[in-house]
Amino acid sequence: GGLAFGFDRLCSLFGGSESIRDYIAFPKNNAGRDVMLDAPSYLDQSQLDELYLELRKPEEK
Image (cartoon, rainbow, N blue to C red; front, side, top):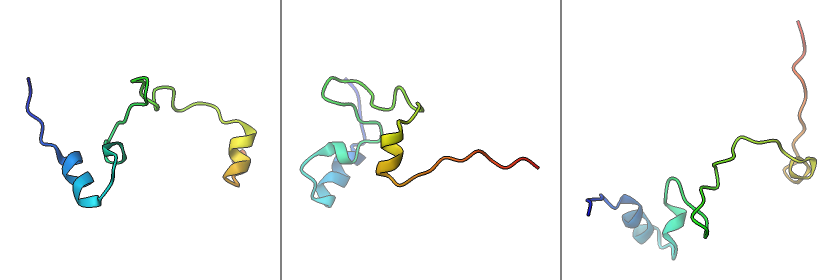
């Protein structure tokens, strides 16, 4: 047993969401794996292109 405040459930009710996952601080995927476990990781160029981001090295002084 345990006692939980249920703030995420309360927020999902007031927010009108069908899924509580939108309000959970550290959600797991369908396999029960933390999606941020491997973060930070290297980004593929396709991911950067999708977000219109460009990485540049800082200028040396």
